[in-house]
Image 1 (spheres, rainbow, N blue to C red):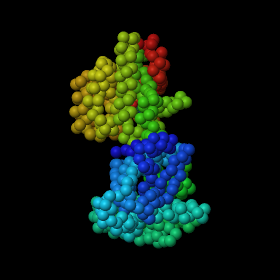
Image 2 (image 1 turned 45 degrees about the vertical axis):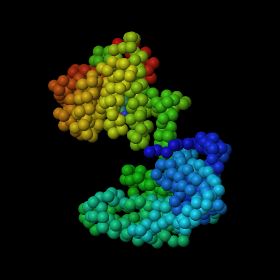
Image 3 (image 1 turned 90 degrees about the vertical axis):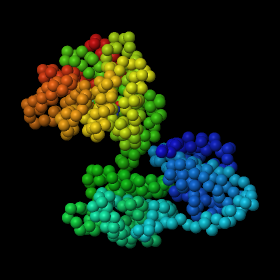
Image 4 (image 1 turned 120 degrees about the vertical axis):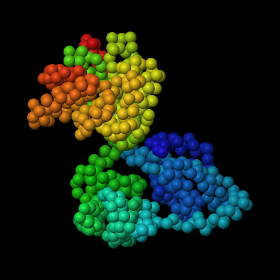
Length: 554
Ligand code: C2E
Ligand code: CA
Ligand code: CA
């Protein structure tokens, strides 16, 4: 479940709106026991949120901590100075102006004079309340997640007073799960213990070391005493902890410099992890520093995901139509391609937002939006010269995980009353391959309802031919790109011709996309390709431009 998100202004309004309803309404960062005051669009962090009930350290059963880590409302009672405080903790996500997301909690607190019975029960538990939480990892003896956060915050604050910044460092073993699977948990634990030994020297008065998750360690250390070469030597030493010819143990590190000391330690650690994983993907060495470009990627991702619902309702996500034509040049339909239109009119292409939406689990929502825009357009064309045109829409492989694609599309047709044969469906080869058995059934259902199903990006994957023997679709959409960078033109033309012939013998129509020149169009027509789409004919364009283009080519 995702927390409610508020920017600073919205949060300020929310706190003001609810403040009259309870004795105290306040925002806290329970991971670090800080109260956050919001005024004039600015955040101020105040230490020791537990001071309200005058305990002198983190409350043992902090309901806000529980709410924050579980993403669920939680409540509890505190007793102080003969009063009982009832605290209702609501988890929220606070988004700052630079896109940083802080997981925090809005507390609604009411208090009343304690009754005799309450006084008695609370006294019975009094000794419990002040017990400190366990802060150590039982396996390695290093700090655990909780301990690391608390001690890192203290360290950062201490050095901040001396005008010194700290580094938060994440260290992680690649494919550690495999170590457990191949060599057993006991061996896995042995390795973790050895790594802990390597890191233990950091755990001193001036720095800390912790094991935060299974195979993920953390360091927090003042910048002036950090020596990158030493860390590198330590990471390289990890390689020798497993004397096995078949498996190489690799530890990598990501470093975040806490230049903004007020952001939550968990965010700092996440950024260190982010630097590390991006670096890994690019195979760039064992140590990665978080830098500004990663931050702007992060801010951009944040903007796309947190603003997604709003941008959908405000109409920022639109469709462009790219004509699909017959060999004669007659327009028979179009592919609907998603575009994000910024408030200043800038058109953002899918490669900028689709991977982000896929990662955030939002792609199915975008696709449903695109499908419904396409349906609205088909409806608008009824009774006009464009009424015979079809619109092809894309279905992402991930849609099948999030929604019932078949039912959603059928409902769309039923609720709008469009001609079902005019909405064509493009499913990529890789989406089919992800789960062949199920996809065969789904494609069957879609076709028996009357949809035309196309296999998109044919030729871009590795398993194209094998797939065709299993799945029955109406149209093969051949990707021209896979022939473009070829060394031997004759051979690739032969391949193209064979694909078209094969499709014909499987009773499938063919459309080639990415047609950029007159020669390509002529050649494909001679080979018997039924339809074309590509820049040679037209680029994807807004609806009105598309209508102007298609008007005399129907
Ligand atoms: P696709 O489905 O293969 O769409 C065709 C892409 O090829 C489009 O890029 C189009 O602009 C581009 N294209 C068309 N003709 C030519 C040509 O002659 N030369 C070249 N070099 N390119 C050509 P676009 O619009 O940037 O879309 C890229 C991809 O984003 C799409 O590839 C599709 O995978 C994805 N996408 C776009 N809209 C949606 C959507 O609504 N839902 C989902 N799930 N994916 C979408
Ligand atoms: Ca497509
Ligand atoms: Ca395609």
